Each structure stands twice: as C-alpha cells, then as structure tokens.
Image (cartoon, rainbow, N blue to C red; front, top):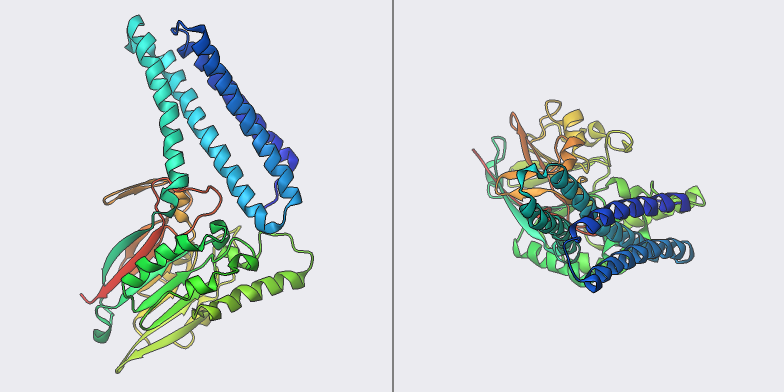
Length: 405
C-alpha cells in the first residue's frame, strides 16, 4: 500500500487552502449584489466551516492511518481521495470559469454582468460537485454489460456462437467486504450463460487478506466450459513494504491459491488446449507484462510453446500495452483480452464515441481494437482503485459472441 508522509499531506492541505482562498475571493465578488448582510455572512461562514472541516478531516484520517490495522487503511485512503476530489475539482472549475467570465465580461452589459456571471459561477461550482457525488455514491456500482459481436476468419466451425464473459480489475479490497454489491454483478454474468469466463487480473489492491469471505461470493460464477484468469500488476504485492521476502512470497502464494477455491484456472505463462469434436482452440495466459515502471513478469513465448499448431488462440494479458509490443503482427493470436486502465474511471461514453484523459498514456485504453485480423478488447474494469467513484466510466461486464466471417 502506498504510504503518504505528513509532508505530502501538508502539501495537499496547502493546495486545498490556496484554491479555497481564490474561490473565496471570487465568492466575495459574486455575492456583492446581495443586500442582506446576514445572508452574506452565513454564506461566508458556511464556506470556511466546510474548508476547515475538510482539512481537519484529512489530517485526522492521516493520524488514524498510522494507528489502525491495514484492513482499515485502504478504506481511509479511499475516503481521503473522495474528500479531496469532491472539494478540489468543483472549486477549481469555479475559479477558472469565474476568472474567464470576469476578464472577458465585455460580452455582457454591466447589468447583465451583475446577474449572469454569478449565476454561471455558482452553477459551474455546484454542477461538478453533484456529478462527483453521483459518481461516488451511485455510478461506481452501476454495473453495465457491453455486448460485443466478433467475426473471426480462423474460428473453427464448431466454435461458432461461443459466448465469453470478460471481467477484470476487481480490486476486492476497495469493496470493503460488501459482498452483496458484487453479487449483483455475478447475477448479471450468470444470466448471460457464458461458455467461458475470463478474468484478466488485479484481483486485489495488494494483500491476500482482502480475499477474506469472497470465495463464497465468486464461486457462484458459472460457465459451461471453464473459468480462466491471469494476474495483474496489483496481485504481486509490489506496492507494499514487506518486513521480509518470505511474507511477500506467502502473500503472493495465498492470492494464487484463492483461484482454486473459486474454481478458476490461473494461467501463469501457459496455455490450455480446448477441444470440441475434432477442432481445437487455445486459451493462453501470461503474467503481468507492462511498460516501465510496471514489471514484465509475462513470458509469451513460453506460454505459446505447446499451442503453435492451433490456429484460433485467445490471449489473456492484463496490460493492453503488451498487445502492441509482443502480440499484434508478432503472433497469430486472434483475440487478446486486457484490463488495467479502468478507463481512468473518468471520461465520456456516448454511443460509439469515447474519450478519457487516460488515452494520452495508453494507446489502447477501452473497447475494441482491430489490426489486420487480430483483435484486442480492453475492459473498463469491474471494481475501482484510488478515487472511490466512476465519472462516465461505469464498471464493465463484457459479453463477447464469436462468429465466423
């Protein structure tokens, strides 16, 4: 788990205070037309009570993190993220919008400026605040099924109509043992009656103790032919300080053993051959492979050793960066399934249009991609990490139906 020093928390609080001072400066300007001294005083008092309360809450959370067990620390960190984003982003937008309006108010008459600018300013502050509240308290668990139909030349005849559910990035520690929430997603998945369920990594945030009690929930997942999984970057315990190497190793082994409890086959740089009548397909799984600073545990060539003779292959690889570097145009793998990006848990999805700031870091970050006859699908993830919400990037269950061209 990432550690936050008191100095880092101090800088965070200082940034919040500075943006609040700017916001208050503009608040004084837009409330100037108000004639009631009592009303203005009440607004100003409420503003600073909220600011002081927020900074105090962040400092208290930091102190509590030093005193509580690791199980509670993740919850406190997510609350810290939530408090910070819900305060900082709306006020930043408010300051920017009001500044632009006041410095370009030549577009309005003096009378219009007195009325229009305060209204737009207040709206620009409150709208993102309520949007963030919706993202945190509603959208984060509004599971969405994406239906994808793929036509593939090399798909064997007997595998036409194959139904696949692809999920990724559960980050179970973020659910804080709220088993009933994920059970809603499991019901949606089972209702799809998939032949295969593929999970592409980040089962936990860091620790094996996050898995406590989840075996009885995830074992409910049902697939006619099989359930397969690979590891993600968070499953190795690399983001924590361990007293000894043995403790890290035991944590990692416990995470691997969990897959047996839920009847998933964990693929560690290996492949499974699946036969129906006289035709075959290969399910390949590699350990996490990402561009630095992410580790490259994956060994695709090792995983392919025993399935070169099979024409139709599906690869499970957590990080979509792997597709460009080692898969597309380098192999004949027909379909690669990845996760990792979460769609940044923030962006725009409208019909066929999608956008997120994460696109400037990852070439392939959400949805379906195709080059020549090779496909990559990147899911937006089922859980969350860091910011405890989703803005325009609902948690995803991907349902893929395969057919032949």
